[in-house]
Image 1 (tube, helix red, strand yellow):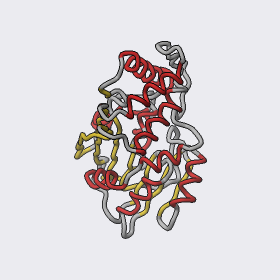
Image 2 (image 1 turned 180 degrees about the vertical axis):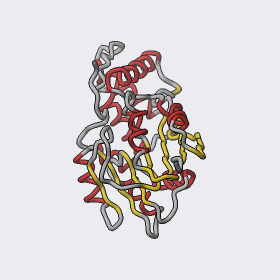
Image 3 (image 1 turned 120 degrees about the horizontal axis):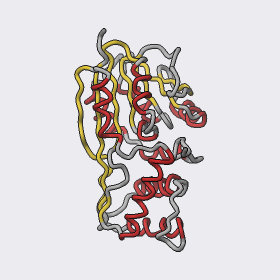
Length: 269
């Protein structure tokens, strides 16, 4: 049985999440899903709390947002940096019943289920219990995650495919979770289901500092700890990392990742 857990766990993860989180995309996606002023909103897997703060701004006046995460350090970071009136954070494990939090009008689950392949359906069912009748559940995640690059050498492509296979089989990661989201809501008989597809990564031309930092951290943490042997490289992981960094810094490189958003309403009865 493989090990499980958050594959991007490291001491600077809250910083990485803050750096890569932008308010424009959150406002666009949450608006499409039906968020509005006065709602009580849960941000599940809230991480650094920056997304929760953006959601809180979208439900004013009169709205309340609660960020939920299992990480004590990230809840502490979120509370210190973003906690304010009507915006709070709680440390809870969504593998278990989330009793005592009250009902919500809108639940946001973005870039969370990809880390919980085996229990993703169970998690969604558990979260649906927190929704008020008629409330909105919004699931957003990536599909074919980290697998869409053009310009890779054969050994670099083999290594990336191998790393992702190890993460899937040994670390409970799901690079194909996006295509499954609709079925979760359909099977739970949610109503008014809508699906939207966009890109999350679209990287070409000169590399930005943010993309360089984000992708390097992914490799330094998740790829390094995946269990993949990097047999293609005499120098192991370090040689793989250097080749990827050279590839990624080349403005000829093309990288993209599809994003799938799915929203639906909990049945009234």
